[in-house]
Length: 329
Ligand code: UDP
Ligand code: MG
Image (cartoon, rainbow, N blue to C red; front, side):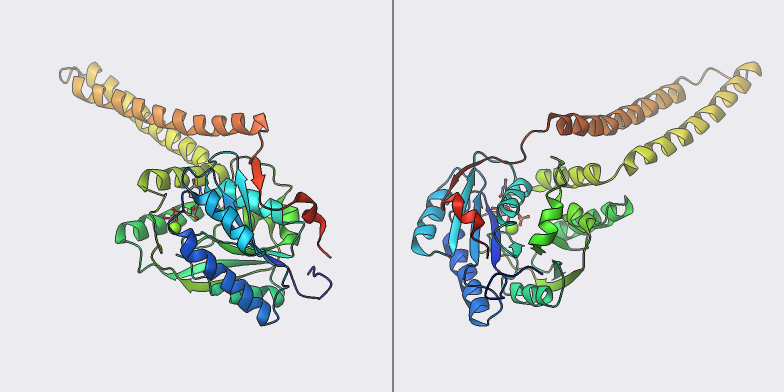
């Protein structure tokens, strides 16, 4: 466990924000309150920070972050040069924090995740855990549809061989030690909740209730959720390829039996050639082939993106001076 001179860990809370002008003024004081409480309880250093990562917002989010950073030294902000998505925003914040703090907690800025659970996360860290996953104890505030799709998604991911913590999203504590190891994972297709368990180290879980958004609207409609699900599976597992191979062998076997049947029918002249069944088989095989090419193409596409070695985030502005990066005692 790394600590600064006073012996208390420096905590950086990393918060991605995209078009959150409505909710930020509501939740920012709650995050500050948490830092103050944890500091008053002697659990963290008063050098702890709340880092807002503006993900190329088109509204007044960045202006609000700049204003907050002038009002209180605990608030700092940085801005991505454009919208890159939630995962990249969190990664940018974590990579920024890793060599100036001892622990990070990533959390969404909409107040859905119980902010007070941070106290338990810090306790777990002080007890020796390097990664603490925030796990939703129930999903009663989500609609039945969101709950059903999300739970099916976790089950699907695990059945595909990707290790993800059930009902855990991106609310978690990670120590700087783990982040320094994580920094050597260079992939650009990032799916944090599947990648963090791969780093290893001692981990634990903290359960919390998930609330409604405090203001504003979700940025994850069904289409984006499906995209995230497909992205998660293809970033973490190559099992779909082996499933296709198995399925392809099965379809070929059935096709082989079909051919024997067709030969017997024609040799014995038992009837008119089965035009309908022929068309059905052609359509069926055509569909299977297209799906297979699509899935394989997705992997090829990912290899293509990885081979470019593009930066995973680009920071255009910060509300603090970079020399502060080296202040860790
Ligand atoms: N977010 C982001 N970039 C995006 C979309 C979302 O940084 O392109 C942030 C957003 O500001 C919020 C978090 O990611 O802090 C989760 O988004 P949201 O609450 O809309 O998703 P939900 O909780 O509904 O799944
Ligand atoms: Mg949310």
